[in-house]
Amino acid sequence: MKLLIAGTSGLDTIETPFGRKENILGGSGIHASISASFFGPLSLLSIVGEDFPTTQVDFLEGRGIDTRGIKKASGKTFHWEGSYEYDMNHAHTKKTDLNTLLNFDSRLSPELKKAEYVFLANLDPDLQLMVIEQLEAPKFIAADTMNFWIESKRSSLHKLIKKVDFMLLNEGEARQFMETPNLPLAGRRILELGAKGAIIKKGEHGAVVFTPDAFFSAASYPQEELKDPTGAGDSFAGGFIGYLAQSGDLSPGNIRTAVIFGSVMASFNVEDFGPDRMRRLTHREIKKRFDEFKRFSHFDEEEKCWKNLNW
Amino acid sequence: MKLLIAGTSGLDTIETPFGRKENILGGSGIHASISASFFGPLSLLSIVGEDFPTTQVDFLEGRGIDTRGIKKASGKTFHWEGSYEYDMNHAHTKKTDLNTLLNFDSRLSPELKKAEYVFLANLDPDLQLMVIEQLEAPKFIAADTMNFWIESKRSSLHKLIKKVDFMLLNEGEARQFMETPNLPLAGRRILELGAKGAIIKKGEHGAVVFTPDAFFSAASYPQEELKDPTGAGDSFAGGFIGYLAQSGDLSPGNIRTAVIFGSVMASFNVEDFGPDRMRRLTHREIKKRFDEFKRFSHFDEEEKCWKNLNW
Image (cartoon, rainbow over all chains, first blue to last red; front, side):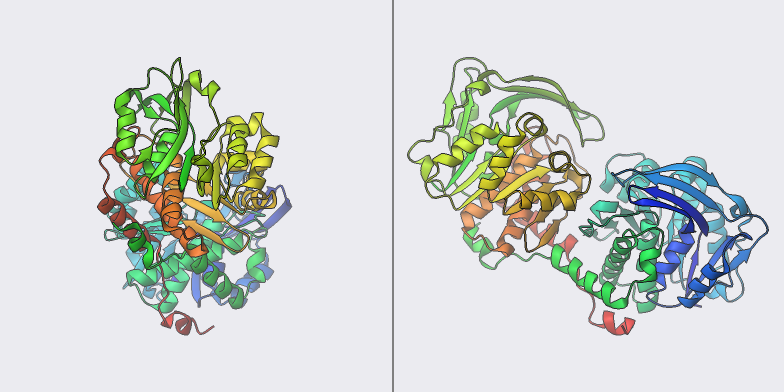
């Protein structure tokens, strides 16, 4: 067992200006796992209810995701209902039914304890900490969180930050958590709290990465086909950790490559509802978009640049 | 005469969480000119009142800015008063006294008509159009605008867009003008209206460039020393056009370099009130920061990347 992702599995009802979908596959663990599965095999630790369709489990298995860590509990699956207006940057939550999520079981099987690469998707930080404590020889741990936990479990998050390699947050969460509107300052404070790296996901503005040695800015894809942003951040994380686990290379240069793969996967995820775009995504398309990211962030001043200026 | 910048000259009163400054040098033309002056000589077309200090004119002249195009009119100089809260992304305007700005004279001297590179900083679009009409052999024209003109002179802006090479807008203005929350779509629409290129300035999120052939995303500097964002967009434009005029190279690669110089100049401008940081800025510092921009946006996947993935 090399890559473990822990997070929620859900059935989402989503409304955007482009349509409405009921009870579609969702949840932080699901979105991250589907994205990571394009890079290699993984196990998902999660929980679902009796209403979770077997066809969806089959879909996950078909993508190379080991679903034995998905506990089937009595009751209903975690359900989120939300909508987006034309400005897709903000989700309006209509309803959150935690249901079986309240019984999330963080105990790892002997096999899962051996995981080397771990992504703790958005989940109660105390559960995330319990997963970390059971790991026998982790090589790289990344974790995400959300505003709800920042408000309700700040001290658990402080403990978590000390134990992860990379903390992933979205822009608003980073500002809220680090209590500053200044993102570079928020990034630095996350490192000061003990993380080895911080990735701040900025949606349509890309992502920025802070490490003690360097700053890296990744563009976002100039996406006109934005149908449903749900799960974009989790898809980013899945591409990031999926590529890292598969390459087994934690050098600063390869971490930048992983961030671009994260950006690529997020850019596809938003093109259709839930994980629908991912269902028909190919390696060829991922490779093509990766190359596009290279082209649209590359610059190299002409040799004559400084000569022209005569500085 | 190679580079001409037309825009406002002002005396600003600015309050931010870091202090308050009264009647400091401001205005779109002034900020853009000071920034461009680091790259080569230029002429500024503008207007001031009787209260505009001679020492400031001397400062501009000392920076290689030909000030003969700055008309001295009776009455007071254009005055803007505004404040910023900790989230420096939005200015709160307290007062705008147009004063002499109402008498802006767009007539060009025979020498200024020969300008090859022209930046029309934020100004009444009808005045911007009148400047363009007098140019005898322009090689590259860029123009900026603001929400006030988008609301009040939309059809003049449509005419302007057809006559410029590059249109520069900030994020909010681009969305407002093109009537879409989707920035890539806004960029495409600006090109469809006739501009050869569109640069959307996103403040703390950098800048994106749209041309018919390519998309380019420039990072922003991870700026913790943000004291006063006034004039950042104009400084960006000044660095962009200043470098283009000096290098005389309009190739796509060199335009990307120019965008980075714009980003570099904007990143310095915000480090102190008004143009105070620019007063003590050196070529050495600009070059150093340019190199930093290269480092923090560069990525190049390891050769083994695709081999690892075995796609």
